[in-house]
Length: 234
Image 1 (cartoon, rainbow, N blue to C red):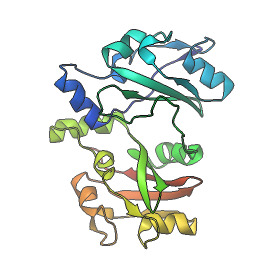
Image 2 (image 1 turned 135 degrees about the horizontal axis):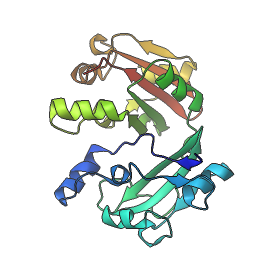
Image 3 (image 1 turned 45 degrees about the vertical axis):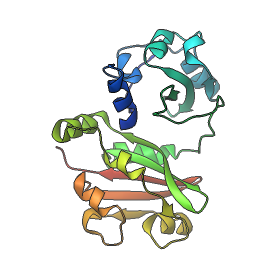
Protein backbone atom coordinates (compact mmCIF):
# COMPACT_ATOMS: atom_id res chain seq x y z
CA UNK A 1 0.00 0.00 0.00
CA UNK A 2 2.98 2.30 -0.55
CA UNK A 3 4.21 2.35 3.04
CA UNK A 4 7.32 1.18 4.85
CA UNK A 5 6.90 -1.32 7.70
CA UNK A 6 9.42 -2.86 10.09
CA UNK A 7 10.20 -6.32 8.70
CA UNK A 8 12.79 -7.27 11.33
CA UNK A 9 15.04 -5.79 13.98
CA UNK A 10 17.98 -6.61 16.21
CA UNK A 11 19.21 -4.97 19.41
CA UNK A 12 22.64 -5.90 20.87
CA UNK A 13 22.44 -7.58 24.29
CA UNK A 14 24.55 -4.81 25.86
CA UNK A 15 21.97 -2.27 24.78
CA UNK A 16 19.07 -4.29 26.21
CA UNK A 17 20.92 -4.59 29.53
CA UNK A 18 21.53 -0.83 29.59
CA UNK A 19 17.83 -0.17 28.98
CA UNK A 20 16.79 -2.57 31.74
CA UNK A 21 19.07 -0.79 34.19
CA UNK A 22 17.18 2.41 33.38
CA UNK A 23 13.88 0.64 34.02
CA UNK A 24 12.90 0.75 30.35
CA UNK A 25 11.22 -2.30 28.83
CA UNK A 26 11.70 -3.09 25.17
CA UNK A 27 13.78 -1.03 22.79
CA UNK A 28 13.57 1.79 20.25
CA UNK A 29 13.00 -0.63 17.37
CA UNK A 30 10.40 -2.68 19.26
CA UNK A 31 8.51 0.45 20.30
CA UNK A 32 7.44 1.22 16.76
CA UNK A 33 6.95 -2.32 15.51
CA UNK A 34 3.52 -1.39 14.10
CA UNK A 35 4.62 2.05 12.94
CA UNK A 36 4.36 2.68 9.19
CA UNK A 37 5.89 5.40 7.05
CA UNK A 38 4.74 6.69 3.64
CA UNK A 39 6.99 5.59 0.78
CA UNK A 40 6.34 8.86 -1.05
CA UNK A 41 7.13 11.03 1.98
CA UNK A 42 10.05 13.35 2.67
CA UNK A 43 11.36 11.63 5.79
CA UNK A 44 14.79 9.98 6.09
CA UNK A 45 13.54 6.47 5.27
CA UNK A 46 11.70 7.51 2.11
CA UNK A 47 14.55 9.82 1.09
CA UNK A 48 17.19 7.10 1.41
CA UNK A 49 15.05 4.69 -0.61
CA UNK A 50 14.16 7.16 -3.38
CA UNK A 51 17.66 8.57 -3.82
CA UNK A 52 19.53 5.32 -3.33
CA UNK A 53 21.92 7.17 -1.01
CA UNK A 54 22.43 6.91 2.77
CA UNK A 55 20.69 9.46 4.97
CA UNK A 56 22.22 10.51 8.28
CA UNK A 57 20.65 12.18 11.33
CA UNK A 58 23.33 13.47 13.68
CA UNK A 59 21.07 14.35 16.63
CA UNK A 60 17.81 12.39 16.52
CA UNK A 61 16.18 13.96 19.64
CA UNK A 62 16.28 17.42 18.04
CA UNK A 63 15.46 16.32 14.50
CA UNK A 64 12.21 16.67 12.58
CA UNK A 65 11.76 12.90 12.13
CA UNK A 66 8.30 11.56 13.00
CA UNK A 67 9.69 9.28 15.70
CA UNK A 68 11.53 12.01 17.59
CA UNK A 69 9.65 11.25 20.83
CA UNK A 70 10.75 7.62 20.65
CA UNK A 71 14.33 8.78 20.14
CA UNK A 72 14.14 10.92 23.28
CA UNK A 73 12.56 8.17 25.38
CA UNK A 74 15.10 5.52 24.40
CA UNK A 75 18.16 7.76 24.38
CA UNK A 76 18.95 7.48 20.68
CA UNK A 77 21.61 9.88 19.43
CA UNK A 78 22.52 9.36 15.75
CA UNK A 79 20.75 7.29 13.08
CA UNK A 80 21.88 6.16 9.65
CA UNK A 81 19.48 5.00 6.93
CA UNK A 82 21.06 2.77 4.29
CA UNK A 83 19.13 1.83 1.12
CA UNK A 84 19.14 -1.90 0.42
CA UNK A 85 17.24 -4.21 -1.89
CA UNK A 86 13.48 -3.81 -1.31
CA UNK A 87 13.85 -1.42 1.59
CA UNK A 88 16.01 0.57 3.98
CA UNK A 89 18.34 -0.62 6.74
CA UNK A 90 18.23 1.65 9.78
CA UNK A 91 20.84 1.53 12.53
CA UNK A 92 21.87 3.96 15.24
CA UNK A 93 23.70 4.81 18.44
CA UNK A 94 22.62 5.61 21.98
CA UNK A 95 23.72 8.02 24.71
CA UNK A 96 24.57 5.44 27.36
CA UNK A 97 27.83 3.97 26.07
CA UNK A 98 26.27 0.60 25.19
CA UNK A 99 26.64 1.17 21.45
CA UNK A 100 29.28 2.51 19.06
CA UNK A 101 30.42 6.13 19.13
CA UNK A 102 30.36 7.65 15.64
CA UNK A 103 31.74 10.98 16.82
CA UNK A 104 28.85 12.86 15.26
CA UNK A 105 29.76 11.70 11.77
CA UNK A 106 28.05 9.23 9.46
CA UNK A 107 29.75 5.81 9.71
CA UNK A 108 31.65 4.39 6.78
CA UNK A 109 29.62 1.33 5.85
CA UNK A 110 31.16 -1.65 4.05
CA UNK A 111 29.47 -2.77 0.86
CA UNK A 112 27.15 -5.54 1.97
CA UNK A 113 26.66 -8.58 -0.32
CA UNK A 114 22.90 -8.22 -0.82
CA UNK A 115 22.45 -11.17 -3.20
CA UNK A 116 24.30 -13.53 -0.87
CA UNK A 117 22.29 -12.36 2.13
CA UNK A 118 19.03 -12.87 0.25
CA UNK A 119 20.14 -16.39 -0.70
CA UNK A 120 21.11 -17.10 2.91
CA UNK A 121 17.63 -16.38 4.26
CA UNK A 122 15.47 -17.42 1.30
CA UNK A 123 17.27 -20.58 0.17
CA UNK A 124 19.36 -21.83 3.10
CA UNK A 125 16.98 -20.69 5.88
CA UNK A 126 19.78 -18.97 7.79
CA UNK A 127 19.15 -17.95 11.39
CA UNK A 128 21.81 -15.26 11.46
CA UNK A 129 24.30 -13.33 9.35
CA UNK A 130 27.55 -11.68 10.42
CA UNK A 131 29.90 -9.48 8.45
CA UNK A 132 33.60 -9.86 9.22
CA UNK A 133 35.63 -6.83 8.20
CA UNK A 134 39.42 -6.73 8.03
CA UNK A 135 40.81 -4.22 10.51
CA UNK A 136 44.56 -4.15 10.63
CA UNK A 137 45.88 -7.69 10.98
CA UNK A 138 42.60 -9.33 11.94
CA UNK A 139 38.96 -9.84 11.01
CA UNK A 140 36.29 -8.48 13.35
CA UNK A 141 32.50 -8.59 13.33
CA UNK A 142 31.24 -5.14 12.35
CA UNK A 143 27.60 -6.04 11.64
CA UNK A 144 25.27 -8.90 12.52
CA UNK A 145 21.62 -9.85 12.43
CA UNK A 146 19.72 -12.64 14.16
CA UNK A 147 16.16 -13.39 13.10
CA UNK A 148 13.67 -12.30 15.79
CA UNK A 149 12.19 -15.79 16.22
CA UNK A 150 15.58 -17.22 17.05
CA UNK A 151 16.36 -14.40 19.47
CA UNK A 152 13.10 -14.95 21.36
CA UNK A 153 13.67 -18.70 21.52
CA UNK A 154 17.17 -18.22 22.92
CA UNK A 155 15.93 -15.79 25.57
CA UNK A 156 13.21 -18.19 26.67
CA UNK A 157 15.58 -21.14 26.84
CA UNK A 158 18.66 -19.45 28.32
CA UNK A 159 17.19 -16.64 30.36
CA UNK A 160 19.75 -14.14 29.06
CA UNK A 161 20.44 -12.06 25.96
CA UNK A 162 23.52 -13.88 24.71
CA UNK A 163 23.61 -15.18 21.15
CA UNK A 164 26.13 -16.78 18.84
CA UNK A 165 26.53 -13.38 17.18
CA UNK A 166 27.03 -11.43 20.39
CA UNK A 167 29.66 -13.85 21.67
CA UNK A 168 31.44 -13.98 18.30
CA UNK A 169 32.03 -10.23 18.55
CA UNK A 170 34.66 -10.95 21.17
CA UNK A 171 36.86 -12.71 18.62
CA UNK A 172 39.58 -11.24 16.44
CA UNK A 173 40.61 -13.72 13.77
CA UNK A 174 44.10 -13.36 12.23
CA UNK A 175 43.96 -12.22 8.63
CA UNK A 176 47.23 -13.95 7.74
CA UNK A 177 46.43 -17.27 9.41
CA UNK A 178 45.26 -20.59 8.04
CA UNK A 179 41.81 -20.49 9.63
CA UNK A 180 38.58 -20.57 7.67
CA UNK A 181 38.05 -16.80 7.73
CA UNK A 182 41.51 -15.92 6.42
CA UNK A 183 41.42 -18.72 3.86
CA UNK A 184 38.02 -17.63 2.55
CA UNK A 185 39.18 -14.04 2.10
CA UNK A 186 42.51 -14.99 0.59
CA UNK A 187 41.25 -17.64 -1.83
CA UNK A 188 38.08 -15.85 -2.89
CA UNK A 189 36.21 -19.15 -2.49
CA UNK A 190 33.24 -19.92 -0.26
CA UNK A 191 33.43 -22.53 2.50
CA UNK A 192 30.75 -24.55 4.24
CA UNK A 193 31.37 -25.99 7.70
CA UNK A 194 29.03 -28.96 7.96
CA UNK A 195 29.60 -29.59 11.68
CA UNK A 196 31.30 -26.54 13.23
CA UNK A 197 30.75 -27.70 16.80
CA UNK A 198 33.11 -30.65 16.35
CA UNK A 199 35.56 -29.09 13.89
CA UNK A 200 38.98 -28.84 15.60
CA UNK A 201 40.09 -26.15 13.16
CA UNK A 202 37.13 -23.89 13.95
CA UNK A 203 38.07 -21.48 16.77
CA UNK A 204 34.46 -20.91 17.81
CA UNK A 205 33.54 -24.60 17.99
CA UNK A 206 32.48 -24.34 21.65
CA UNK A 207 30.20 -21.41 20.82
CA UNK A 208 28.69 -23.33 17.94
CA UNK A 209 27.97 -26.20 20.30
CA UNK A 210 26.53 -23.92 22.99
CA UNK A 211 24.15 -22.18 20.58
CA UNK A 212 23.24 -25.21 18.46
CA UNK A 213 24.69 -24.06 15.15
CA UNK A 214 24.50 -26.98 12.71
CA UNK A 215 26.37 -25.53 9.72
CA UNK A 216 28.13 -22.31 8.80
CA UNK A 217 28.68 -20.69 5.40
CA UNK A 218 31.56 -18.29 4.73
CA UNK A 219 31.31 -16.17 1.59
CA UNK A 220 34.09 -13.84 0.37
CA UNK A 221 32.97 -10.37 -0.67
CA UNK A 222 34.41 -6.97 -1.50
CA UNK A 223 35.02 -5.59 1.97
CA UNK A 224 35.32 -8.76 4.03
CA UNK A 225 33.64 -12.11 4.64
CA UNK A 226 29.94 -12.79 5.06
CA UNK A 227 29.12 -15.54 7.53
CA UNK A 228 25.70 -17.09 7.96
CA UNK A 229 24.54 -20.13 9.82
CA UNK A 230 21.73 -22.63 10.14
CA UNK A 231 20.35 -24.11 13.34
CA UNK A 232 17.47 -26.48 14.14
CA UNK A 233 14.25 -25.14 15.60
CA UNK A 234 14.23 -24.72 19.38
